[in-house]
Image (cartoon, rainbow, N blue to C red; front, side):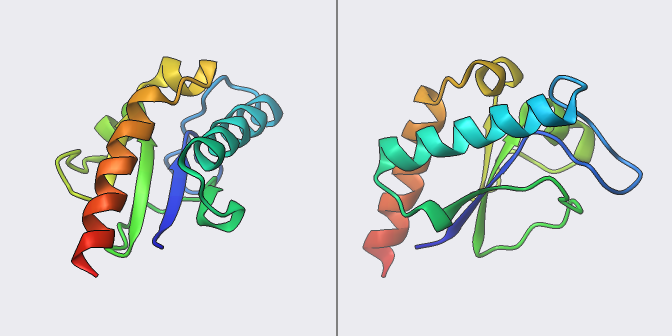
Length: 114
């Protein structure tokens, strides 16, 4: 099972976008999003983690769920097979529907490849 990192804010480095501007609220919203994905996809709690210190480096063995605003500013292409863009509002409201569908497709493809 690949590691899934959810990126909705970045707290270190020169590029430090936030979800709401409040680090405590951002962490709670991102954690809730992670927990909802874990429940909806029946994943282990260790497989989905909030990543608050992403250095913009893409590990090919990790799946990244990235706020579309951060993704656009980072210069990474969302067409990469291990990057799932998520709407800023979806992260704020904990709406996982579209992300769940994309992740289910990616995980199924990886599972059948093994």
